[in-house]
Image 1: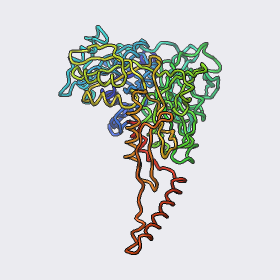
Image 2: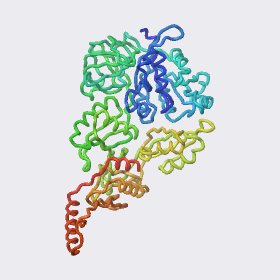
Image 3: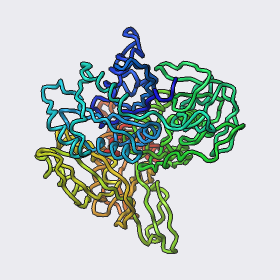
Image 4: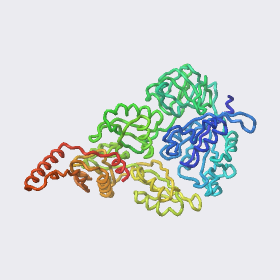
Length: 597
């Protein structure tokens, strides 16, 4: 098709603002999917996405739309996630487009991720088409939402489209606006091939499936291609587009979005953001690619059965193909055996990775308490990065510890500002500013330690604001803090999977809370279990799980007391021996509960 009739766009929004529903209506109106095959959240092909009602992975689909001017256009839609943890997926999609639909819920208005995704799109010079969605809701306030969008964009008041994706209202106007306002792709077929790898997945039969946007040139089946960063050469075995089902094509030209397979079996050979070119007619330089994402949260993932270690390694290799922001490296724990230290973009990202590994690869896993990277300067002048509390040097060798701080942006209803401020201050937050987006909605900015917000900060914001609050954050810098290592001991032995690095002022309260929670959740064993929290050699909290008791004298009826005493002594000796060789059984719920303390 003529390059002038190609439009590449993405849909960006805050979580639950109707992004996937709008994509569904666009698929129906362009007849990309039949009514018989249609189901809700059509582009969310993971069971986990449909179950949670969120988009986790970006999805690309090619649509054919006959506009009111009588011309047929190719629309390449790349759907994007809305949760703060999946910002990297959004950035990849934006780099492959010329325009974006900015979808805002008419009932909830502009939220934190709306602002973050908008700024990201503007940095890439994308054409923005603002859409106020869910105008059919009884509590919708479209005029107020229009005013908030206009405050953000300025001068867009007359260009804001009104829609109800659920009912299909205004969707044709959105498609017409895409055709008229988003420019066709730049570049040309005659130039050397430059294709941007913006995503990938793994197929047992085909190997790695590479998702590409052709920026320049043409690629055909059978061509010899070169990945410019790793210097490896391959032969193209299949080219195709998503309609939304995969459909093979003979060639792809400038401006098109699709996939290619080259029988790549090693997941590590694909790098998201790499440039594909032809061996026979190489491009002079690679495309800019993507900024490397820095993991924010670190945690250990271990198989419950040590025999599953190789299966877990293989699963992580394949999963990293479809999620370039997921990082992992082998590690071992005295308590849990061999596993992997993994880096995530946030706590939801961590939960999703765990669930995908368990569901898609049939694994039974244990996750250790999450932490962030701390910079520790030793007394010898050396600076080390610590992402695992077990790697922390003894306190007498530490000169100073620094922890990562972020700028946190909380968008909240005006009547919840006081409670949000109290929450932020309890998390060691430093107040920066308050900006009113409208009469009843404000944006609070705080500088806050990352370790304080990775677990339950977002949940508490939602609770305080009755679901209307939202959070976004970006990394700032490292600052020196008074931090200590909090150890959990079970029967006097360190349980490294539950160790954590905490602020000195909060160590006692956290230690006491974990100890009490573990006492509730660890089932009674045949031996007594002493649960202790310590800082160095100082025990700061203790609880005891009493042992199961066997009524050894139950068979005795009458007779001399010495007979009972003999049985009690025998039982006592047995328990001593059991304590010497026994191991404490800790259920997975105990890890999760300790994580949320």
